[in-house]
Image (cartoon, rainbow, N blue to C red; front, side):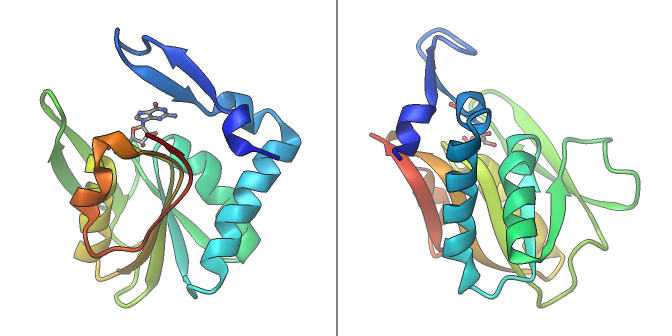
Length: 171
Ligand code: 5GP
């Protein structure tokens, strides 16, 4: 099965000129969703990860089944004000303005091997911020895994030195 065929391109969303990669068409297809999660989990199996970290919100969709398949825990990274206990916070630059992400301070123990799972790598800003949060807590980031990579946005440049794995690439 070709995963790319299950991903819908929505032109001019959320703004004119952007071709949004819509993963809802993939995840409502049982076979397609299972194949995507199985492939992501297979790649991570030899990495001996202790935890999967997934950024809100589509990182939850792929990160939790991958964690379940590996039998490891899942840690959410969320927008500000959503996590109930003590948090570590990071502010990072967007094309226009800044954004903030948070993680529970006690979610990762120093030395734990962590993989970040998200649906899509674009500019790499979200993932670079997530990496910093994990490393602030003493976690060791062993893999960054995405269903989709928009290669023309050069997100890998911001993630130099990390193991970046993607299943479907758009040039
Ligand atoms: P980045 O920080 O790499 O520029 O953007 C990646 C984040 O934005 C991911 O968390 C991803 O969910 C979201 N994102 C950006 N563009 C798209 C897109 O075309 N499709 C989907 N599904 N997510 C996107």
